[in-house]
Amino acid sequence: MADIKAKLQSMAAGLPVSRDLTNEAETLQVLTLATEILSLGADIEEVKKLTYGSESEKPAPPVLISAVGAAESKLLLKKTAPHHMVCIFAMYGEQNRLRTKAEHENGQNFLCIKTKQLEWLFAGEEGKTWEIVAVDDGCPNNSKDLAKEIIAKNELKNITILDLKNAYKEKIPFFMDRGLDEACKKSRKGGAIMYGLQYAASTNVFSPSAVPKLVMYTDSDLSTDMSLCGLLSYGILNNGCSMSMGARYGSPGTFLVKPPDQGAAPHPQSHYEQPNMMKIVLRHYVRVRLLPMLQGIYDTQCAFKCFRAEDLQAVCKDVKSMGADFDMELLLCALLHYRKGGVDQAKLCDVAGTLFTEDFAESNFMASADDPDKNYKTYGGMMDALVGMHERFIEPDSEEAKAAKDLAEFCRGMPWETYKKMHDKLNERGLTLFDHPFALDELKAAAA
Image 1 (cartoon, rainbow, N blue to C red):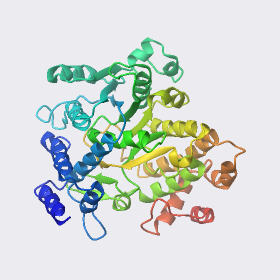
Image 2 (image 1 turned 60 degrees about the vertical axis):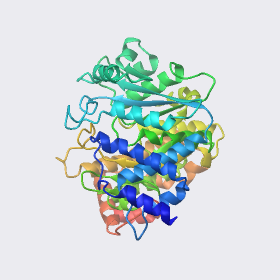
Image 3 (image 1 turned 45 degrees about the vertical axis):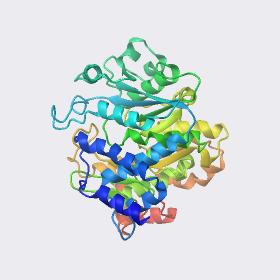
């Protein structure tokens, strides 16, 4: 083990303290290091102990942690049976990140990089294949045509570019019923992903029909490595869960990186460093009690979710949102579908920790700082929204509904000013983990 530790320390030497998603050499170094880690033949759990940090030691540089995750993913993929993986992401306003760093300061060349990550992961895996489906939902800067140029120039394989506008032209009922317009302005990522999911469920352009087909979706940028897709495959095919997903925070094995000068923050440090720590705690407290199928899932919005293709029509049919909040609704619809099918809670969803690098430079969802109470209004509004979800997804005569009755009544229609008062009082208690068992009376007293 001393020899393995020395080799890992040698790999870590000289690595950057943070991550730069525009640096192709750095991103591809993850795969080189992952190959080196695999060649050591060491137990991956021991490797994680030596790199993930502890109470007395900081985690290794994020490039090395990403490499450990990629190595584990490849090891797990080797254990899976033959299957096909469809990888979906939305393209709106991606005209900069699609380019290289030389072409634009925020360029990530993400189409080429994602392809290389998947090629590395699936290399040598007989009967295991992949494809990429990128969906433009009305990008005013013509991301789709730029993507097609990049595919042709670099001779990229196994990639399909879809245009959500075709759903309007073809008057597809699912999208027309949700108000899709000709310019796709009603879609804010959600419509694109839903279009991609439905396409993947109904077509077999690159997939052999004789093997299981898994469908995952992710973000367009390089915040989460595609080389981690083996974790998703293993969660469904080997762990026997109905779906699988990644997590950016909230549990051991998750890491958040905030460039340009911060390293990999592990759990619970990443949670404690959140400026909205108590808001997240309160949201989780209410969420898992009003929507108990979310038990064990802390990062519901993580865009790294995977399903069996044959389940998608049933899972997607009741998703109403085409906006940025579709993630949560899709997850709930999936979990409810599997629950109704008799799946045990423990087998609903496999959750795997990931390293996630924040990418603020090109975010399409940055909040305005003009209103000092904006976050209180946003998170406060979630309280009533969660009550609405509870009433939609939980049978009113069930034991779960009865157990949550008083909490639902407390949260229903809560003014943001009341939420702010409750939050600020509870925030005085200091560092608080996700699963803190507040008593309802404690919340009421803080809000009074």
